[in-house]
Length: 299
Image 1 (cartoon, rainbow, N blue to C red):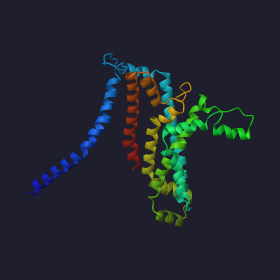
Image 2 (tube, rainbow, N blue to C red):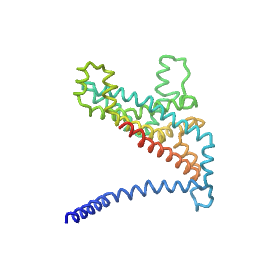
Image 3 (cartoon, rainbow, N blue to C red):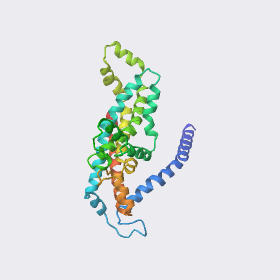
Image 4 (cartoon, rainbow, N blue to C red):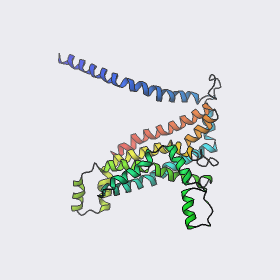
């Protein structure tokens, strides 16, 4: 009787789980799995989005993709954004999180809100706003330069292939800095004050407290922040599109802007699908490696 009741309870549990997960599974299949499989099929054809799939190309779209200098530049720019986020944005967010978290003044909450506000803004609004800031004639940056150097020539940062990507990196830093700072503050709030007091009693310096207590304890939080930063860097689109559509001369192109421009705007759906599949495989490969090796090593 006990075995029968146990089997009946297990069946009821499984049925409940299936019923609760089924709607989410259906939505996920329709809006994630099916489009991915559909893009994989389209990537094997030369297709403009109209009519039947008749011109089978095999892997020629992928061969063309990795032989295109513009895509290779877009790939390089995406990795530059990723490295910049990891080496500049995240350390700065961590330093400021440590400062704000330990601050006792009443305006600490206000500072947190101010730093987080750019993330709340739409990416398109952010891009348009910084277009005005960078404007060579009416922009804030050139206005400040003109105050100190009236004879200086206006800087057209978004029109120069040598400076446009760096100008966009500043915007990305400003936009997403507060998100990572907030994530770090949330991790810091989980550390007991008793650990800080014990370390100070033992004579540990502030640097030792940070490196030997704080950072090891918030390592899972850091791993989440790094994951968001890398995936976001590989998929950045809106800000770059709003600030110049990947120009001038494709100097600020990323993989996603390349996909939109060369796939959708030119009605080359097959080739654009090949770009989308490539981006998907890069992100998927990173996620698998990250979860299997880095996260396990950290825990």
